[in-house]
Length: 165
Ligand SMILES: [Fe+2]
Ligand SMILES: [Fe+2]
Image (cartoon, rainbow, N blue to C red; front, side, top):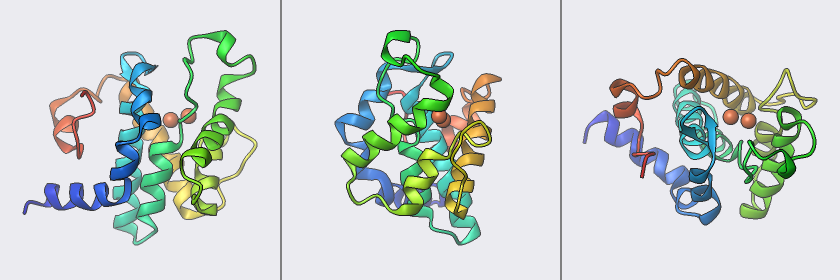
């Protein structure tokens, strides 16, 4: 088995059932950064957080799960009527509420990672290493998406599953 296949298998053990859920799949319908969907972004963040946490010997399952659910706000961010408040500040709270409904067994670390992922623009502080990893992964992935490096063949080959389907 190649290293890529081993990493993919370990990743899918953490989030395979979540990837199959209707709620997570529904993120494919909304754009997040340019043409990148909320699902593609969330999968990217989840895998970067998973790889970082695994490399550092931290709780990579929590990092992968929180990464996948961190933007599970489940509305069109372009539709102002769907979120009357400040999207930047509010969406982690919506994501946490939906993530808890989907996964009643979310750990404290996972909850904190989701609700604090916009730090320092959010009121909630990352209080564990896994929250820090998701926070950093979110910023790295968003940057790669905005500068159009996400679509490069190198990154697409590195990802564990095809996020376009
Ligand atoms: Fe977000
Ligand atoms: Fe994000």
